[in-house]
Amino acid sequence: MMVTPGYMRGETLFMEITDVRVRKLNKEGKMKAVVSVTFDNEFVVHDIKVIEREQGLFIAMPSRKTAEGEFRDVAHPINASVRERVQASVLEKYETALMEESFDEAVGE
Image (cartoon, rainbow, N blue to C red; front, side, top):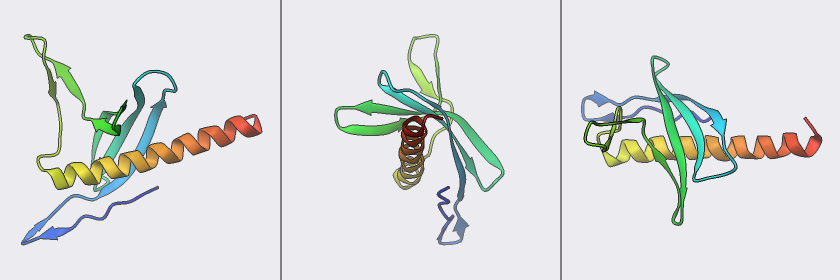
């Protein structure tokens, strides 16, 4: 399990990523996984999706469809550095889960 430490900027302590759980893996389609991320062992964000596109993998935060038919994030990082930390943690855990699944399939579990 990768734990991303919280950090200080000025007088502000930023949240630590304390757990990343891959809840669903998909081999087919562009959506490759559904993940939950826990911050500070106190707050969890469910339904973060790992999406595949031509440029590589990225994460999509949980969203809902508005009355106008647009999708809006329910929860999301408010700056690029936090998004990068969350994405790096999620993609690392996703790659680990893929390797574990491939190993389990190879040994017949």
